[in-house]
Length: 216
Image: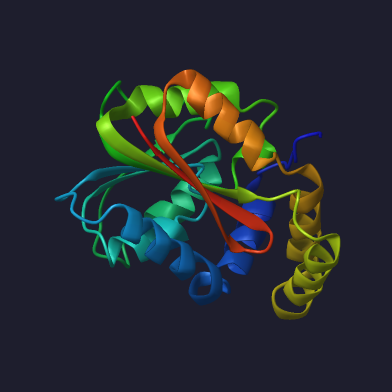
C-alpha cells in the first residue's frame, strides 16, 4: 500500500481542523475514554501526542487524565492551531514541530504515547515505532489508533458516506483512502514485538479502526 501523502499547507490544515472539530464527541472523546481506561493510575504523567494534528485527542484526554502534554507534528500550521486551542483548555503543554518518524523528544522522557491515524501516512512504520519505544520511559505505555484495512468494504463505504453527509466531501475521501491504505494490525504487532514492546494488545472499537496498546 502507498502512504497517504497530503500537502499540509495552511489551507489543508485549516480545512482538516475545521472538519475534525465536528468529530470531537463521536470520535476523539470515544478514543480519549479508551486511552484513559488503559492508563488509569499513572499520577500526572508526561504524554506525547505523536502526529497530534489539531490536538483534539489530547484536549479530550486531558479532561480525564491531567498531566504534561507534548504536542508533536511535522506541520507548523497544525502545531500553531493546537497551540491556539490549548489556550482555551486548562492544559500543561509544550509544542514541537517534528516528524512522527523521529519525534524531537529525549530518550525515556514520557510515560504515555498516543498516536492516532499516523501509521497509514508513513512510508514505513519501523522508524516511528522504534522512536516511540525510545522516548518511552520503562513501564510506559503506547496507545495506537489506526485504520483497519481488513474491515468490511461495505462498512468503509457507509462510514465514508456518513462523513460526506456530516462533515465534508474531503473528509469522506480521506476516510475511504485510509481504509485502502491502512496497515494491518498484524504487521504492526509483529514489528512492535521485534522492537521489544511488551504486553501488546489489539482490540477493535470502531469497524474501521484498531486500537493497539503495549508497554516498554
